[in-house]
Image (cartoon, rainbow, N blue to C red):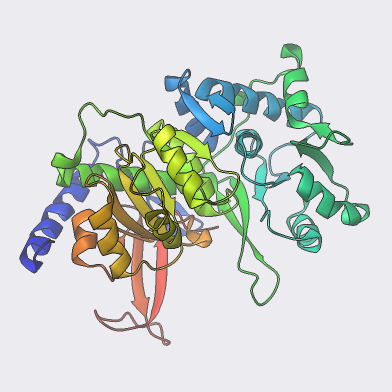
Length: 430
C-alpha cells in the first residue's frame, strides 16, 4: 500500500507522463476542436469512424477473435462476414447512412457482426435490451424509428404480436427450424462479389451519428442516448491512453514476452456500454480474443478462464465475489489473469482486500465509473492507487474528459464536499 507521500510523488510523475503522452510526438496526441459550438480536447491521430477500428483487425487476420461454445471466428473471418452483411443491408434492404437498425439478442458472434455491419455503412445501430418484454421492444422500435431488426428466436417470439404496428424487416439470429425470416449467415453467404459495394467509398465522418443506446426506464420509458463515431472512439482510446500511461508509471508490470495471448471473458450484456465498448470494441485495439458466455455462471467463468487462458475478468463486483466463493476457485489455474476489473456498482474495501489476497499477484484489481451517456467514461482507479484508496472510484479518465462537483446553484465545490457530478468531454453523448 502506498503512503500519502508516495501517492503525491506518483501523482506529480503521472501528470508529467500524461502531458508528454498527449503531446505532438505521441500517437495519442490531443488537440482542441470545436464540436457543436463547444471547445473540447480530442484525439488527433485516431480513426475517423468505427470502420477504421474494425480494420485494425487486419493486422492479426488469422488470430482467433469471437468464441462462443464451439463457434470460433478469426479476426479475418469476422471482418469478412460483417462486410458481407453490410452489403446485404445496402443491397437487400436499402439501408443507408442515418437509417436505424436494431439488434435484440443474447450475446453471440452474430450480435457483434451485426453491430459491425450496421456501423460500417454509416447507419445507426440500436442495441436493445434483450431482457425487454414484447411491449418494451415495441416501444424501442417505435421510439428509435428502426427500419430493420436483427433478433434471435426468443426475441422474435416476443415481438411477433406487435409486428402489425411496425414496418420493420427482421433478420433472424440462430432461429428455430420453423423460422419464417431470412437467416443471418445464409444472407451473408449468398451476397455475390458482383453485388458488393466498396465500403470505403461511403464517407463516414467523426461527427456522424452511430448509436442509440437505451438507458434508465425505472420510473418511465427508457431514454435513447445518441452518440457519434468520435464519441465512442474517444472512449476506446481513453482506455488505451490510460493503460499506456500506467505502464510508463509502473514499467515493472509490463510483460516483455507474455506466456498467454490476451483474452477477455464477455460476461455482461452487449447491449450495455460495458459489454459493447469496454469489452467488445476495445478488443480490436488490444488484438485480444472475446469469449462469450450463454449466461453468467461463476463455475463456467472459471472453466473458461483456465481453458481459454483469459487475461481479463471484468464485470460488476458481485461477479468477482461469486468467482472467489466458487468451490472451484482454489483448483482453477488462473495464471493467465492480468486484471480483475469492476464497474456498475461500488466494490467494498473488504472485497478489494480479498482480491489482492486471493487472486494471482499480476491480476491487478481496478474499478471504473461511467454512464451510457458518457460512453462508459468518467473515472478509473487501479493497482497501488486503488489499494491505497479502497473507497475511491478514482480520478477523471485522461486525457479528453474533465469532471467537477457542483452544488444546487451550480458552484464548483471544494474537496470533501458532496454535490452533483458533472462530466464534460469528447465521449459525452450528442
